Image 1 (cartoon, rainbow, N blue to C red):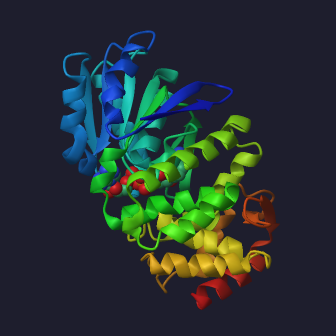
Image 2 (cartoon, rainbow, N blue to C red; image 1 turned 90 degrees about the vertical axis):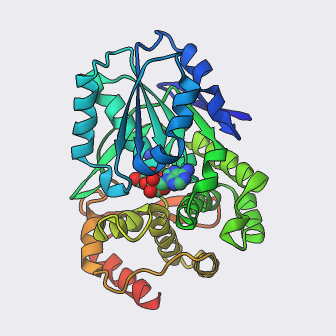
Length: 357
Ligand SMILES: NC(=O)c1ccc[n+]([C@@H]2O[C@H](COP(=O)([O-])OP(=O)(O)OC[C@H]3O[C@@H](n4cnc5c(N)ncnc54)[C@H](O)[C@@H]3O)[C@@H](O)[C@H]2O)c1
């Protein structure tokens, strides 16, 4: 098992990553001060079915706990479920010493983190990520829920006490979820690590090549990159925005499709290809990325997507300023920057991009 130290202005904590890292859970809980009166495990129904008993067995009699299971799917990162979790926590008597365990992928991590970040003005939580994507989402303290008007529109920065990333849990991920998580690995490589990018391009010819040591190494590196950025800019006043590479369009696609039929990472993958097409220096990288993603089985976008609706959503992106849409682009590999667009200009480019797909 490897340990990566995350260093942010508000909190330092460890990511324990590797096979059976989950066995570390009780010792992490025992080291908390004050000791938790009780725990609230928040998970979704898929992960609950697969791993809840294992986590409960590990906790055993060491701590008392309550469990709440949410339906799976990004449309469940909702105000209704947030409210249901808060009501449940109040009904079960959680107090300010209690600790939330977020057992699941990014959906659960974001929702449970937001519940913890706001319950009684903020209680502690631990991320127990179960997807490849969550190498990104479990680290860095962004928590929140979606609003029908836009993704992740309501939330707080709230760092976990620890991240326990038991990579044996990844074995049950369906193919499209592997693809989803891999998109965020590719994102980290494109914005910050040419060597990782080149090695992934060379070695990942099939989505099942993402396993064992090579997957572990990519996840470790992705977490290190995230830490390098978040440690300098915890609350996204500057360079943290680079982590949104591919997300301005990606979030708009997810929203337009009502978070169904496409995963977060698959939508971000299209967003990255689009962003690369906007600078002629990176057009070629974008074309190669598009072909590589296609060969790995990333699905095409539905033809029914409306360009003007996507642009309207992009205007509401959290990075948008003074009516301009802000896109993260690359000058070259490892060199991200922000570029502002008038909506009308971007609409023309997006329309050409979608027609060419
Ligand atoms: N907070 C951040 O910094 C940050 C960063 C990136 C993404 N995100 C958010 O993360 C979310 C996407 O995360 P995700 O892709 O992990 O989605 P997810 O949590 O919805 O999980 C995807 C699917 O896989 C299932 N699943 C999870 N673990 C499994 C396992 N081990 N075996 C089998 N099935 C499993 C889930 O039940 C779900 O159906 C989005 O809401 C996105 O906005 C947040």
